[in-house]
Image (tube, rainbow, N blue to C red; front, top):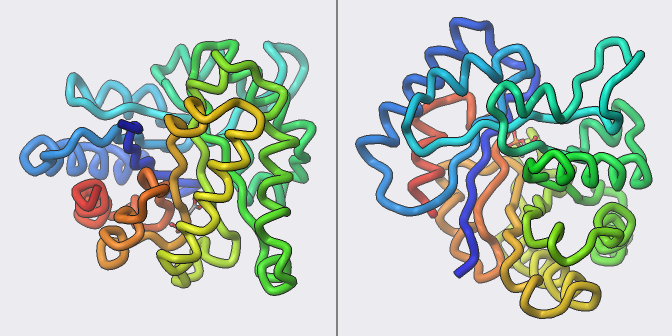
Length: 252
Ligand code: PEP
């Protein structure tokens, strides 16, 4: 059985008080209502990582960082290393979110280094991929996203690959209210799993969680998560509302 995962990406949102409130509400609701074994990850902004980890206490929720630098340490003003996020209690790191690729010019080559660095720190990368609307409309989306995997993670060995989580996030569906249809999501996820199998073999491809991201909400989560190759979600906007986020977790 593949692991099911729901990760909330808070992006650069929330004051410290809002972050505390959100965490305590999510913990409270899920401790009463969650009945599945989905792994739940909260990815707050860096300054709240340690606080969020402490506020979660001993409930079964993990913390993840939204990014990290590819070097161990050094003169990189404003950057944050894997050791730092791990020291704050993070277990996961989102790598290659489309906002990092687009606004911070993160290339496939750089992301390949980051993925390796995250794994070397014994953290779990949530590796994001996904196409723009232009690429989707050109009909080249399957090849484009497979190429992102080839460039970003095909240098890993089997032991490393066993730890990785993939998040397919069509850029045209992120924060837009548009979602990929469940058929579109399934088509891409299956294609990505088959692509993983060509490099890492069927067993690893079968056990790699592939999450969907892009305007996931309680109203569409059941249908999307019901697809055979969709193993959960990476949730942006709806993760800032405790009720919505908890309902998405319950939709697994
Ligand atoms: C995201 O940014 O990872 C995301 C999926 O955002 P949203 O859910 O708001 O579309």
